[in-house]
Image 1 (cartoon, rainbow, N blue to C red):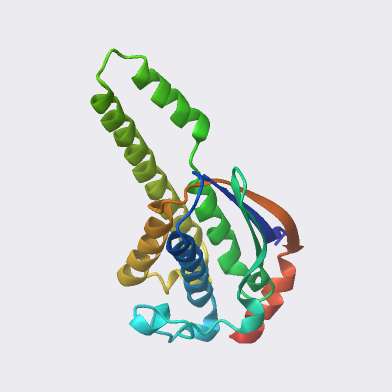
Image 2 (cartoon, rainbow, N blue to C red):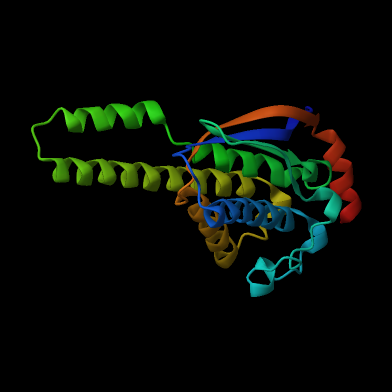
Amino acid sequence: MPATKLPYEIVIFAVDEGSIALDDFANFLRDLVTFHDRLCVITSPKYREYNLSSSFFYTRYGRPIPAGQSLRLTHLKKESPLEIGLLLASAAIFGRAVQPFVQGLRDLVLLPGDYRKQRGDIRRQELDEQLIVQRIENVRLDNMERRKHIAQDAVLKNLRGDRLVRERLDHKTEALLRRDIERIGEHPIQITGVETKRTIPSEETEDADESES
């Protein structure tokens, strides 16, 4: 099997509308951690018996990810766009979780150029302001819904393609993953880009995965 590269450090860019409610930002980070950690549990043979649907999963210490492999913040820039740097320390152990995590975020990317064009087309129509605002909001919601479905389908397709992971994907587990992606996609902080800053060879993770089983 040819060696591939796994993302190890990424930067998430997001729409910055000015001041951000601290609770919104905390929830956004929490949703990223939940999605990341659920993928780690699903893809690791070590946690085959772990109950993913337990409410304990959502508590601070409810997920079995070792401290050294937790999602880590490398930097934060409150500019336009908002910039969040993440270290995927999990790539060294939970290699199978990293690609679907990054792919899911990338598929949620808001395409600002397309959105601006759609808004411009609506504003050029001879409509009253209230109707313009409503139609622009409808376009935003349609874009959000489409991106969520694309991201959900891509993540599940990636996981189903791995024979060691496929058996964990029962209906309940897939529904939980879809909900994780939905929470991020519906968030007031909208992702506009995901850039990979550093990678590691995938073979480093394969040996680690085997030693867990």
